[in-house]
Image (tube, rainbow, N blue to C red):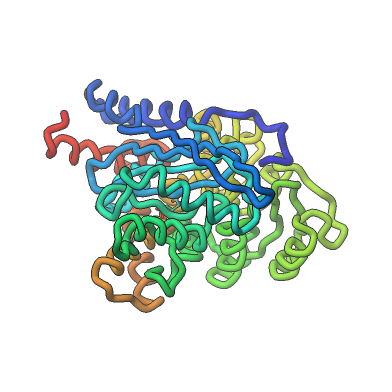
Length: 422
Ligand code: GLU
């Protein structure tokens, strides 16, 4: 978390590789298979010149990393982030391969990024950057090649500009280029809160397995962005949980009697942070992680925030990883030993890409589903995947992340074998 630099900074790609190595050992995978999966299939870096509003031209660095397409077109978001690095994009592209696979989607994994600070850019500058990204990369993208989506600091408007630029280059409408589009131009109902909703379905299933009563359960939410704020509302609505703590990049707040989520949201809108709400004391990430709560939603884009230093202090029974990569491998081992049930990122937050897949299907059929249809299908897919992972974890006597790796990697390996790659 940007305002909380005390956390040890991990290299997310090394973390992703360590997780894969661990899984390779459990599954006793051939070295050739590991060699393929350890590195992305393709990594592209482009320079994007953008005319700024003051008349100057600024050159931005953009990336697209395509990890694996054994099971279908590469799929994954594009981040606009001031601290973007190729290693972050590499890690995230690998996690996308596991994410689409664990959900049984006919898709591979990829990720994109641009080093920029969208908060300091005008709409016009953002539009020119988005169109520039597509002009630089269009040959490597496409509805059956590589299908991007929104991610950190990108949104439906940015997707719309990108889709329009690609359609102009192709000379025809290409709604299927990417997902997370506005509804009026081929978006899917339910895409907005799909990540949080999917996470809720996995939490509901976990609660059944753990015999945990979610009604009145105390919940802390790390990160109050898109997924985090939807999670706060949904946990209240779906389970009657009490949101006792929330954080953002400036720090966290805690009220053991429960926070008024709507009021906190308003406060954040006005002051740009949850801190300072009703004069509550500002807590650090570490302090929030150690609170006496039942469930933690890790929804902040802060890879490695749950590390070996804070893991022993966690009192929650379940951690739902709505963000990618919040827990280090060392912390994973500690949490498992302490009986904390971690619903791993690429399972817990797979609701977003699952509804993205539904959006692709709807674009291809030119026929659009109702919200109830989307939620019903998402619920079924998340529930089934949660139990496949839980069963694998039980069978191999490993933690949930290792269980998820077993399910996801096995499927990709089966695909690679069937195609004759190994
Ligand atoms: N950016 C989201 C993720 O990391 C969604 C990706 C997608 O919809 O393709 O899962």
